[in-house]
Amino acid sequence: MASSSGLRNRRAFLSFLAASPILASVGFTSRWVEDLMAEPLAAQDTAALGAQNEVIIKSVKEALNVFDFDAVARTKLSPAHYTFITDGSFNNETLRANREGFSKYQIRLRRLTGITKVDQSVRIFGVNWESPIFLCPIGRMNAYYPQGAVVVARAAKATRTLQILSGSAVILADPKIIGDIIAARGEPVWFAGLGDTLDQPLIKQVEAMGCPTLVWTIDDGGANTIGAKSIQHVEVRDLDREADSRCSGCHSNLPKITRIQASTPMDMLGAVGSLLGETSVKLSWDDVKRVRDMTRMKLVLKGIVTREDAALAVQHGIDAVIVSNHGGHEDASGRGTIECLPEVVAGAAGKIPVLIDSGFRGGADVFKALALGATAVGIGRPHIWGLSSFGQEGVETVIALLRRELQVVMAQTGAASIAKISRNSLVLHS
Ligand SMILES: Cc1cc2nc3c(=O)[nH]c(=O)nc-3n(C[C@H](O)[C@H](O)[C@H](O)COP(=O)(O)O)c2cc1C
Image (cartoon, rainbow, N blue to C red; front, side, top):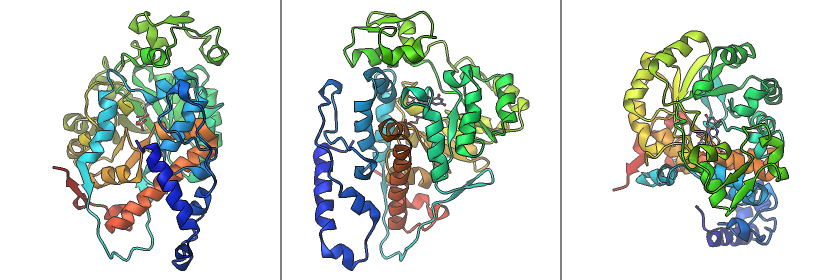
Protein backbone atom coordinates (compact mmCIF):
# COMPACT_ATOMS: atom_id res chain seq x y z
CA MET A 1 0.00 0.00 0.00
CA ALA A 2 1.28 3.50 -0.84
CA SER A 3 2.61 5.29 2.23
CA SER A 4 1.04 8.62 3.11
CA SER A 5 4.39 10.43 3.00
CA GLY A 6 4.89 8.99 -0.47
CA LEU A 7 1.55 10.37 -1.55
CA ARG A 8 2.37 13.78 -0.04
CA ASN A 9 5.65 13.89 -1.93
CA ARG A 10 3.93 12.96 -5.17
CA ARG A 11 1.39 15.72 -4.71
CA ALA A 12 4.18 18.24 -4.03
CA PHE A 13 5.98 17.04 -7.14
CA LEU A 14 2.85 17.43 -9.27
CA SER A 15 2.38 20.97 -7.93
CA PHE A 16 5.91 21.76 -9.02
CA LEU A 17 5.35 20.19 -12.43
CA ALA A 18 2.14 22.07 -13.10
CA ALA A 19 3.85 25.39 -12.41
CA SER A 20 6.73 24.53 -14.66
CA PRO A 21 7.15 25.76 -18.24
CA ILE A 22 8.62 22.35 -19.03
CA LEU A 23 5.14 20.86 -19.13
CA ALA A 24 3.92 23.36 -21.67
CA SER A 25 7.02 22.97 -23.79
CA VAL A 26 6.37 19.26 -24.23
CA GLY A 27 2.70 19.94 -24.89
CA PHE A 28 1.61 17.98 -21.81
CA THR A 29 -1.65 19.67 -20.91
CA SER A 30 -3.35 16.59 -19.55
CA ARG A 31 -6.47 17.35 -17.53
CA TRP A 32 -5.26 14.71 -15.17
CA VAL A 33 -2.40 16.81 -13.87
CA GLU A 34 -4.58 19.92 -13.75
CA ASP A 35 -7.14 18.04 -11.71
CA LEU A 36 -4.49 16.83 -9.39
CA MET A 37 -3.69 20.41 -8.53
CA ALA A 38 -6.82 20.68 -6.41
CA GLU A 39 -5.82 21.20 -2.82
CA PRO A 40 -6.21 17.96 -0.89
CA LEU A 41 -8.14 18.00 2.34
CA ALA A 42 -6.22 18.03 5.53
CA ALA A 43 -6.33 14.60 7.08
CA GLN A 44 -9.60 14.06 8.88
CA ASP A 45 -9.89 12.58 12.27
CA THR A 46 -10.14 8.94 11.40
CA ALA A 47 -8.48 7.67 14.53
CA ALA A 48 -11.49 5.57 15.44
CA LEU A 49 -11.03 3.58 12.28
CA GLY A 50 -7.24 3.41 12.48
CA ALA A 51 -6.72 5.14 9.15
CA GLN A 52 -3.71 3.97 7.18
CA ASN A 53 -3.68 6.84 4.73
CA GLU A 54 -3.74 10.25 6.35
CA VAL A 55 -4.72 12.05 3.17
CA ILE A 56 -8.46 11.85 2.78
CA ILE A 57 -9.31 13.20 -0.64
CA LYS A 58 -12.47 15.25 -0.93
CA SER A 59 -13.03 14.85 -4.65
CA VAL A 60 -12.20 12.24 -7.29
CA LYS A 61 -9.99 14.83 -8.96
CA GLU A 62 -7.47 14.50 -6.16
CA ALA A 63 -7.10 10.74 -6.50
CA LEU A 64 -3.65 9.45 -7.36
CA ASN A 65 -4.35 5.76 -7.10
CA VAL A 66 -7.06 3.37 -5.98
CA PHE A 67 -5.88 3.41 -2.37
CA ASP A 68 -7.09 7.01 -2.06
CA PHE A 69 -10.61 5.60 -2.35
CA ASP A 70 -9.93 2.98 0.29
CA ALA A 71 -9.04 5.78 2.72
CA VAL A 72 -12.27 7.64 1.99
CA ALA A 73 -14.38 4.48 2.16
CA ARG A 74 -12.99 3.91 5.63
CA THR A 75 -14.44 7.21 6.79
CA LYS A 76 -17.80 6.72 5.08
CA LEU A 77 -18.74 3.14 5.91
CA SER A 78 -19.82 1.63 9.18
CA PRO A 79 -16.78 -0.05 10.76
CA ALA A 80 -18.35 -3.48 10.46
CA HIS A 81 -19.03 -3.05 6.75
CA TYR A 82 -15.63 -1.56 6.04
CA THR A 83 -13.89 -4.39 7.84
CA PHE A 84 -16.01 -6.98 6.10
CA ILE A 85 -14.95 -5.65 2.71
CA THR A 86 -11.31 -5.23 3.60
CA ASP A 87 -10.39 -8.29 5.59
CA GLY A 88 -9.63 -11.72 4.34
CA SER A 89 -10.49 -15.02 5.91
CA PHE A 90 -8.44 -17.10 8.31
CA ASN A 91 -5.32 -15.09 9.13
CA ASN A 92 -5.31 -13.10 5.93
CA GLU A 93 -2.69 -15.41 4.36
CA THR A 94 -4.38 -15.46 0.99
CA LEU A 95 -5.26 -11.77 1.11
CA ARG A 96 -1.58 -10.93 1.61
CA ALA A 97 -0.42 -13.49 -0.95
CA ASN A 98 -2.60 -11.87 -3.59
CA ARG A 99 -0.59 -8.65 -3.28
CA GLU A 100 2.81 -10.23 -2.62
CA GLY A 101 2.49 -12.45 -5.66
CA PHE A 102 2.91 -9.48 -7.98
CA SER A 103 6.38 -8.71 -6.67
CA LYS A 104 7.57 -12.13 -7.89
CA TYR A 105 7.38 -10.78 -11.41
CA GLN A 106 9.26 -7.79 -12.73
CA ILE A 107 8.53 -6.00 -15.97
CA ARG A 108 11.13 -5.70 -18.73
CA LEU A 109 10.85 -2.25 -20.24
CA ARG A 110 11.85 -1.40 -23.78
CA ARG A 111 13.14 1.97 -24.90
CA LEU A 112 12.66 4.00 -28.08
CA THR A 113 9.56 2.07 -29.08
CA GLY A 114 7.99 5.05 -30.84
CA ILE A 115 4.58 4.20 -29.41
CA THR A 116 2.21 7.17 -29.42
CA LYS A 117 -1.07 5.35 -29.05
CA VAL A 118 -2.14 2.34 -27.06
CA ASP A 119 -5.22 0.25 -27.78
CA GLN A 120 -6.25 -1.76 -24.75
CA SER A 121 -9.49 -3.15 -26.17
CA VAL A 122 -10.22 -6.86 -25.82
CA ARG A 123 -12.76 -9.22 -27.34
CA ILE A 124 -14.54 -11.72 -25.12
CA PHE A 125 -17.22 -14.05 -26.47
CA GLY A 126 -17.44 -11.96 -29.63
CA VAL A 127 -17.96 -8.66 -27.80
CA ASN A 128 -15.43 -5.81 -27.81
CA TRP A 129 -14.57 -4.09 -24.53
CA GLU A 130 -12.56 -0.89 -24.20
CA SER A 131 -10.25 -2.42 -21.67
CA PRO A 132 -9.46 -5.81 -20.15
CA ILE A 133 -10.41 -4.45 -16.72
CA PHE A 134 -13.81 -5.67 -15.54
CA LEU A 135 -15.94 -5.23 -12.41
CA CYS A 136 -16.19 -8.30 -10.19
CA PRO A 137 -19.46 -9.42 -8.63
CA ILE A 138 -19.83 -8.03 -5.11
CA GLY A 139 -22.73 -9.02 -2.92
CA ARG A 140 -25.00 -6.78 -0.88
CA MET A 141 -23.87 -3.56 -2.52
CA ASN A 142 -26.61 -1.53 -0.87
CA ALA A 143 -24.52 -1.77 2.28
CA TYR A 144 -21.86 0.35 0.60
CA TYR A 145 -23.96 2.92 -1.23
CA PRO A 146 -27.68 3.47 -1.79
CA GLN A 147 -28.75 1.34 -4.76
CA GLY A 148 -25.11 0.32 -5.06
CA ALA A 149 -25.46 -2.20 -7.90
CA VAL A 150 -27.50 0.23 -10.00
CA VAL A 151 -24.94 2.98 -9.47
CA VAL A 152 -22.12 0.62 -10.47
CA ALA A 153 -24.13 -0.30 -13.57
CA ARG A 154 -24.32 3.38 -14.54
CA ALA A 155 -20.55 3.69 -14.13
CA ALA A 156 -20.03 0.52 -16.18
CA LYS A 157 -22.20 1.98 -18.92
CA ALA A 158 -20.39 5.34 -18.90
CA THR A 159 -17.00 3.64 -19.16
CA ARG A 160 -18.19 0.73 -21.34
CA THR A 161 -16.86 -1.76 -18.83
CA LEU A 162 -17.81 -5.39 -18.40
CA GLN A 163 -19.81 -5.72 -15.18
CA ILE A 164 -20.53 -9.01 -13.48
CA LEU A 165 -23.56 -8.75 -11.25
CA SER A 166 -23.58 -10.71 -8.01
CA GLY A 167 -26.64 -12.85 -7.47
CA SER A 168 -26.34 -12.30 -3.74
CA ALA A 169 -29.05 -12.49 -1.12
CA VAL A 170 -30.43 -9.00 -1.77
CA ILE A 171 -30.89 -9.75 -5.46
CA LEU A 172 -32.38 -13.16 -4.79
CA ALA A 173 -34.85 -11.63 -2.34
CA ASP A 174 -36.14 -9.28 -5.04
CA PRO A 175 -35.17 -10.48 -8.52
CA LYS A 176 -36.78 -7.39 -10.10
CA ILE A 177 -33.61 -5.58 -9.07
CA ILE A 178 -31.84 -7.44 -11.88
CA GLY A 179 -34.11 -5.62 -14.35
CA ASP A 180 -33.24 -2.24 -12.77
CA ILE A 181 -29.55 -3.01 -13.07
CA ILE A 182 -29.84 -4.10 -16.69
CA ALA A 183 -31.78 -0.89 -17.43
CA ALA A 184 -29.06 1.21 -15.75
CA ARG A 185 -26.33 -0.65 -17.65
CA GLY A 186 -28.22 -0.26 -20.91
CA GLU A 187 -27.67 -3.90 -21.81
CA PRO A 188 -27.77 -7.27 -20.07
CA VAL A 189 -24.90 -7.87 -17.68
CA TRP A 190 -23.06 -11.05 -16.87
CA PHE A 191 -24.73 -12.70 -13.89
CA ALA A 192 -22.84 -14.48 -11.11
CA GLY A 193 -24.61 -17.18 -9.14
CA LEU A 194 -23.03 -18.27 -5.90
CA GLY A 195 -22.38 -21.91 -4.97
CA ASP A 196 -25.49 -23.95 -4.38
CA THR A 197 -27.83 -20.93 -4.60
CA LEU A 198 -27.72 -21.35 -8.35
CA ASP A 199 -30.84 -23.30 -9.28
CA GLN A 200 -32.92 -23.84 -12.38
CA PRO A 201 -35.56 -21.09 -11.78
CA LEU A 202 -32.82 -18.50 -11.27
CA ILE A 203 -30.91 -19.66 -14.33
CA LYS A 204 -34.06 -19.53 -16.46
CA GLN A 205 -34.87 -16.09 -15.11
CA VAL A 206 -31.52 -14.49 -15.91
CA GLU A 207 -31.49 -16.23 -19.28
CA ALA A 208 -34.95 -14.81 -20.05
CA MET A 209 -33.68 -11.34 -19.10
CA GLY A 210 -31.05 -11.63 -21.80
CA CYS A 211 -27.94 -12.12 -19.68
CA PRO A 212 -25.42 -13.56 -22.14
CA THR A 213 -23.12 -15.14 -19.59
CA LEU A 214 -23.64 -17.04 -16.38
CA VAL A 215 -20.71 -16.95 -13.99
CA TRP A 216 -20.79 -19.68 -11.40
CA THR A 217 -18.80 -18.85 -8.30
CA ILE A 218 -17.48 -22.06 -6.81
CA ASP A 219 -14.92 -20.83 -4.31
CA ASP A 220 -17.08 -19.76 -1.39
CA GLY A 221 -15.70 -22.31 0.98
CA GLY A 222 -17.22 -21.00 4.19
CA ALA A 223 -14.60 -18.58 5.43
CA ASN A 224 -14.38 -18.58 9.14
CA THR A 225 -13.41 -15.27 10.59
CA ILE A 226 -14.60 -12.34 8.55
CA GLY A 227 -17.69 -11.83 10.65
CA ALA A 228 -15.69 -12.08 13.85
CA LYS A 229 -13.17 -9.54 12.65
CA SER A 230 -15.89 -7.14 11.65
CA ILE A 231 -16.65 -6.94 15.33
CA GLN A 232 -13.27 -7.44 16.95
CA HIS A 233 -11.34 -4.95 14.85
CA VAL A 234 -13.64 -2.14 15.70
CA GLU A 235 -13.79 -3.21 19.32
CA VAL A 236 -17.52 -3.50 19.39
CA ARG A 237 -18.23 -5.75 22.31
CA ASP A 238 -21.89 -6.34 21.53
CA LEU A 239 -23.24 -5.45 18.15
CA ASP A 240 -26.92 -4.74 18.57
CA ARG A 241 -28.20 -4.64 15.05
CA GLU A 242 -31.73 -3.74 15.94
CA ALA A 243 -30.64 -0.75 17.97
CA ASP A 244 -28.22 0.55 15.37
CA SER A 245 -30.09 2.41 12.67
CA ARG A 246 -27.28 1.73 10.22
CA CYS A 247 -27.94 -2.01 10.53
CA SER A 248 -31.62 -2.45 11.07
CA GLY A 249 -32.71 -1.35 7.61
CA CYS A 250 -30.95 -4.25 5.94
CA HIS A 251 -30.41 -6.82 8.66
CA SER A 252 -33.84 -6.90 10.22
CA ASN A 253 -34.95 -9.69 7.90
CA LEU A 254 -32.02 -11.96 8.71
CA PRO A 255 -32.32 -14.84 11.20
CA LYS A 256 -33.09 -13.85 14.75
CA ILE A 257 -29.51 -12.96 15.61
CA THR A 258 -30.08 -9.35 16.42
CA ARG A 259 -27.46 -9.07 19.09
CA ILE A 260 -23.98 -10.40 18.35
CA GLN A 261 -21.26 -10.74 20.92
CA ALA A 262 -17.57 -11.43 20.66
CA SER A 263 -18.19 -14.84 22.25
CA THR A 264 -20.86 -15.83 19.74
CA PRO A 265 -19.90 -19.06 17.96
CA MET A 266 -18.46 -18.91 14.50
CA ASP A 267 -21.59 -19.90 12.64
CA MET A 268 -23.51 -17.14 14.41
CA LEU A 269 -20.81 -14.60 13.66
CA GLY A 270 -21.29 -15.59 10.08
CA ALA A 271 -24.52 -13.64 10.20
CA VAL A 272 -22.54 -10.45 9.71
CA GLY A 273 -19.87 -12.02 7.61
CA SER A 274 -19.53 -15.13 5.57
CA LEU A 275 -22.07 -17.86 6.10
CA LEU A 276 -20.71 -21.27 6.88
CA GLY A 277 -23.89 -22.79 5.49
CA GLU A 278 -23.33 -21.24 2.07
CA THR A 279 -20.48 -23.25 0.71
CA SER A 280 -19.49 -24.64 -2.65
CA VAL A 281 -17.35 -27.39 -1.18
CA LYS A 282 -20.17 -29.91 -1.40
CA LEU A 283 -20.61 -29.33 -5.15
CA SER A 284 -19.03 -31.68 -7.69
CA TRP A 285 -18.32 -31.89 -11.42
CA ASP A 286 -21.66 -33.71 -11.75
CA ASP A 287 -23.30 -30.45 -10.67
CA VAL A 288 -21.31 -28.63 -13.32
CA LYS A 289 -22.64 -31.05 -15.91
CA ARG A 290 -26.18 -30.51 -14.61
CA VAL A 291 -25.91 -26.71 -14.80
CA ARG A 292 -24.19 -26.87 -18.18
CA ASP A 293 -27.17 -28.82 -19.51
CA MET A 294 -29.64 -26.29 -18.08
CA THR A 295 -28.61 -23.28 -20.13
CA ARG A 296 -27.43 -22.04 -23.47
CA MET A 297 -25.80 -19.00 -21.86
CA LYS A 298 -22.02 -18.95 -21.82
CA LEU A 299 -21.00 -20.63 -18.60
CA VAL A 300 -17.94 -19.39 -16.70
CA LEU A 301 -16.50 -20.97 -13.56
CA LYS A 302 -15.16 -18.43 -11.06
CA GLY A 303 -12.64 -19.68 -8.53
CA ILE A 304 -10.45 -22.05 -10.55
CA VAL A 305 -6.85 -22.03 -9.27
CA THR A 306 -5.25 -25.23 -10.55
CA ARG A 307 -4.22 -26.84 -13.84
CA GLU A 308 -6.33 -29.94 -13.15
CA ASP A 309 -9.53 -28.01 -12.57
CA ALA A 310 -8.93 -25.82 -15.62
CA ALA A 311 -8.58 -28.96 -17.74
CA LEU A 312 -11.76 -30.42 -16.20
CA ALA A 313 -13.60 -27.18 -16.94
CA VAL A 314 -12.64 -27.51 -20.60
CA GLN A 315 -13.80 -31.16 -20.59
CA HIS A 316 -17.16 -30.14 -19.11
CA GLY A 317 -17.91 -27.62 -21.84
CA ILE A 318 -17.21 -24.52 -19.74
CA ASP A 319 -16.70 -21.41 -21.86
CA ALA A 320 -14.15 -19.58 -19.66
CA VAL A 321 -12.68 -19.69 -16.19
CA ILE A 322 -11.86 -16.93 -13.73
CA VAL A 323 -8.77 -17.50 -11.61
CA SER A 324 -10.00 -16.21 -8.29
CA ASN A 325 -9.82 -16.79 -4.57
CA HIS A 326 -12.61 -14.33 -3.82
CA GLY A 327 -10.01 -11.67 -3.02
CA GLY A 328 -8.69 -13.73 -0.11
CA HIS A 329 -12.18 -13.68 1.38
CA GLU A 330 -12.74 -17.40 1.49
CA ASP A 331 -9.67 -19.62 1.74
CA ALA A 332 -6.40 -20.17 3.57
CA SER A 333 -4.37 -21.38 0.62
CA GLY A 334 -1.78 -18.64 0.94
CA ARG A 335 -1.50 -18.61 -2.86
CA GLY A 336 -1.95 -15.43 -4.79
CA THR A 337 -3.99 -15.75 -7.96
CA ILE A 338 -1.12 -14.34 -10.04
CA GLU A 339 0.88 -17.38 -8.86
CA CYS A 340 -1.93 -19.74 -9.85
CA LEU A 341 -2.43 -18.14 -13.26
CA PRO A 342 0.36 -19.91 -15.22
CA GLU A 343 -0.88 -23.38 -14.31
CA VAL A 344 -4.51 -22.50 -15.06
CA VAL A 345 -3.48 -21.10 -18.44
CA ALA A 346 -1.61 -24.37 -19.05
CA GLY A 347 -4.69 -26.41 -18.06
CA ALA A 348 -6.96 -24.37 -20.32
CA ALA A 349 -4.46 -25.03 -23.12
CA GLY A 350 -5.70 -22.12 -25.23
CA LYS A 351 -9.14 -23.72 -25.61
CA ILE A 352 -11.03 -21.22 -23.42
CA PRO A 353 -10.28 -17.70 -22.14
CA VAL A 354 -8.75 -17.38 -18.68
CA LEU A 355 -9.83 -14.34 -16.68
CA ILE A 356 -8.44 -13.43 -13.29
CA ASP A 357 -9.10 -11.31 -10.19
CA SER A 358 -7.97 -10.87 -6.57
CA GLY A 359 -5.54 -8.24 -5.39
CA PHE A 360 -5.29 -6.12 -8.55
CA ARG A 361 -4.64 -2.52 -7.55
CA GLY A 362 -2.59 -0.99 -10.34
CA GLY A 363 -1.93 -1.00 -14.07
CA ALA A 364 1.32 -2.92 -13.58
CA ASP A 365 -0.56 -5.72 -11.79
CA VAL A 366 -2.99 -5.92 -14.69
CA PHE A 367 -0.15 -5.94 -17.18
CA LYS A 368 1.55 -8.86 -15.42
CA ALA A 369 -1.60 -10.98 -15.61
CA LEU A 370 -2.06 -10.20 -19.30
CA ALA A 371 1.57 -11.11 -19.94
CA LEU A 372 1.00 -14.44 -18.20
CA GLY A 373 -1.91 -15.23 -20.50
CA ALA A 374 -5.02 -13.74 -18.89
CA THR A 375 -7.67 -12.33 -21.21
CA ALA A 376 -9.18 -9.92 -18.69
CA VAL A 377 -8.63 -8.76 -15.12
CA GLY A 378 -11.28 -8.09 -12.49
CA ILE A 379 -11.34 -5.60 -9.65
CA GLY A 380 -13.48 -6.16 -6.57
CA ARG A 381 -12.65 -3.96 -3.61
CA PRO A 382 -11.24 -1.02 -5.62
CA HIS A 383 -14.55 -0.31 -7.31
CA ILE A 384 -16.40 -0.73 -4.03
CA TRP A 385 -14.03 1.80 -2.44
CA GLY A 386 -14.83 4.14 -5.33
CA LEU A 387 -18.55 3.49 -4.92
CA SER A 388 -18.56 4.06 -1.17
CA SER A 389 -16.49 7.21 -1.51
CA PHE A 390 -18.02 9.12 -4.37
CA GLY A 391 -20.73 6.94 -5.91
CA GLN A 392 -20.75 6.65 -9.69
CA GLU A 393 -17.95 9.18 -10.12
CA GLY A 394 -15.80 7.16 -7.74
CA VAL A 395 -16.28 3.93 -9.67
CA GLU A 396 -15.59 5.68 -12.96
CA THR A 397 -12.42 7.27 -11.61
CA VAL A 398 -11.11 3.98 -10.25
CA ILE A 399 -11.59 2.46 -13.71
CA ALA A 400 -10.00 5.47 -15.40
CA LEU A 401 -6.95 5.41 -13.11
CA LEU A 402 -6.30 1.73 -13.73
CA ARG A 403 -6.75 2.11 -17.47
CA ARG A 404 -4.32 5.04 -17.52
CA GLU A 405 -1.73 3.10 -15.57
CA LEU A 406 -2.08 0.10 -17.84
CA GLN A 407 -1.71 2.36 -20.84
CA VAL A 408 1.58 3.72 -19.53
CA VAL A 409 3.01 0.27 -18.76
CA MET A 410 1.96 -1.03 -22.17
CA ALA A 411 3.69 1.89 -23.87
CA GLN A 412 6.81 1.40 -21.77
CA THR A 413 7.03 -2.25 -22.76
CA GLY A 414 6.47 -1.56 -26.44
CA ALA A 415 3.00 -3.12 -26.55
CA ALA A 416 0.66 -0.95 -28.60
CA SER A 417 -2.18 -3.43 -28.19
CA ILE A 418 -3.17 -6.21 -25.82
CA ALA A 419 -2.18 -8.82 -28.41
CA LYS A 420 1.35 -7.41 -28.36
CA ILE A 421 1.78 -8.06 -24.63
CA SER A 422 3.91 -11.16 -24.20
CA ARG A 423 5.43 -13.34 -21.51
CA ASN A 424 8.75 -12.05 -22.71
CA SER A 425 7.96 -8.76 -20.95
CA LEU A 426 8.26 -10.41 -17.53
CA VAL A 427 11.13 -11.82 -15.54
CA LEU A 428 10.78 -13.89 -12.42
CA HIS A 429 12.24 -12.11 -9.42
CA SER A 430 14.94 -14.39 -8.05
C1 LIG B 1 -17.17 -7.71 0.19
C2 LIG B 1 -17.04 -8.71 -0.92
C3 LIG B 1 -18.18 -9.32 -1.42
C4 LIG B 1 -18.07 -10.25 -2.47
N1 LIG B 1 -19.20 -10.81 -2.97
C5 LIG B 1 -19.11 -11.70 -3.99
C6 LIG B 1 -20.28 -12.30 -4.55
O1 LIG B 1 -21.40 -12.03 -4.12
N2 LIG B 1 -20.12 -13.18 -5.57
C7 LIG B 1 -18.88 -13.48 -6.07
O2 LIG B 1 -18.77 -14.27 -7.01
N3 LIG B 1 -17.76 -12.93 -5.56
C8 LIG B 1 -17.85 -12.04 -4.55
N4 LIG B 1 -16.72 -11.46 -4.05
C9 LIG B 1 -15.42 -11.75 -4.69
C10 LIG B 1 -15.19 -10.78 -5.84
O3 LIG B 1 -16.03 -11.07 -6.92
C11 LIG B 1 -13.75 -10.86 -6.36
O4 LIG B 1 -13.42 -12.19 -6.63
C12 LIG B 1 -12.74 -10.27 -5.38
O5 LIG B 1 -13.27 -9.17 -4.69
C13 LIG B 1 -11.50 -9.85 -6.14
O6 LIG B 1 -10.49 -9.46 -5.27
P1 LIG B 1 -10.18 -7.93 -4.87
O7 LIG B 1 -11.29 -7.48 -4.00
O8 LIG B 1 -8.89 -8.06 -4.16
O9 LIG B 1 -10.09 -7.14 -6.14
C14 LIG B 1 -16.80 -10.56 -3.01
C15 LIG B 1 -15.66 -9.95 -2.49
C16 LIG B 1 -15.77 -9.02 -1.46
C17 LIG B 1 -14.52 -8.37 -0.95
